[in-house]
Image (tube, rainbow, N blue to C red):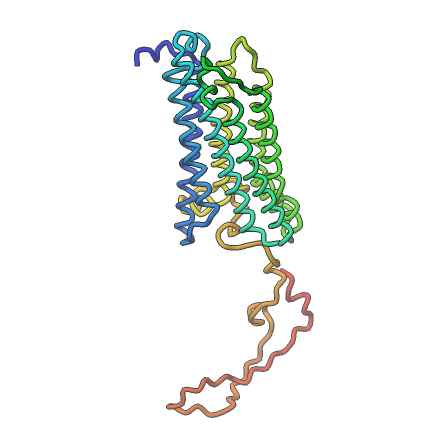
Length: 344
């Protein structure tokens, strides 16, 4: 603990930011589970995928904090002890695999939530296409990380004979393709949403909620920029920034995936969230997009204010021991102006 007085400010910032965002991700998933319990709804596939994404996100965050505190990312630390350098290379490889697994789970969770909310066949086909691309991206990334160096151990032990591909180009490809996947996921429900019959203000609120993933896209852009700026002068320090942005992307992705289903918890806590979260009232608690209830014919005309003239003329006389249900002879007087009765 005495060494903490001499800690580098960037190290303190890294540990603090990663810890806070990881805690927010954990709280978000707890709220998601709590919301399902409040609505007495069974867990769905999107919930399990989100929990899986949280597990990999927390593992990534712990690994990042632990490696930063005990090994550091500075060139002087790696030059003093070659074993420390080998550990750092291993951490970087494992961290990349944890990250791509976390974002794949979270992205799949969001898309399966879209499928449950929007029932149109073309939209579902598009969602399954994005899911297939998401799985292919995950598979390609894992294979590329495992095959870029031969033999595999050459990833962390460069004292042996072996070769490696261009790691920087691979990182750029992974980052750019991930950015395209994030943009696609954010934009996917917007055309269907704006085609629904609802007030424009509600459409804007829902669009804003679904578009909160743009924050993650901005983080991905910054990470891509940091990857392109990697130089031999401060490679470890630049990878420390990339590790920070990677943890932020995974943690905020979990938070973003849980926001649409968290409203029952806010209502339970008597907390009034922003209109963006409130706009999903009923959408993720069992209701799906469909015809506007306001335009449907009422099941009971009397509820719409139509005049009913009930005459107590029984069709048959009731016997005390007869179990037959007798209905009164009901005469319905149609309204003079049907359009006026439907107006609110």
